[in-house]
Image 1: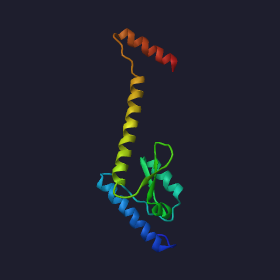
Image 2: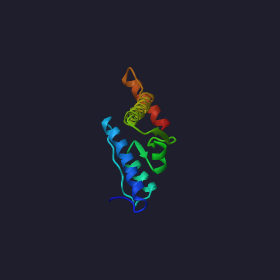
Image 3: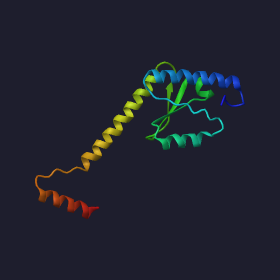
Image 4: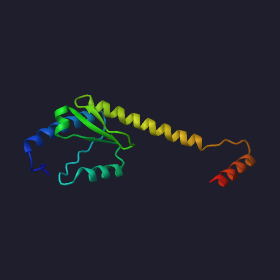
Length: 136
């Protein structure tokens, strides 16, 4: 769809701003999708992309454009944060994705380590399994 019916000039300016940010992200190797369904409210859009597993959601409206920033929300939780718009936004998003992946990997490795027991004999393993079943 071409865009909302209200304020078409402002919409064109906003989309030029968004396109510049998207170009920076794509140049940094980040896969980006723009949701241009103007008839869908933000809440359902946010839920849809969270359900799909999109790790970062970038938001940009007229106020954000005027402030020269993007609002970013992590799927892993926490507060939204602002990123300055411009050529560096792609690198900043790529770094944030790398940091998120590193934190998720560290948490998974910790869970694996916490749930792994080493034994020296079959009897020791059988005892460990029996104790784990009794605790569970």
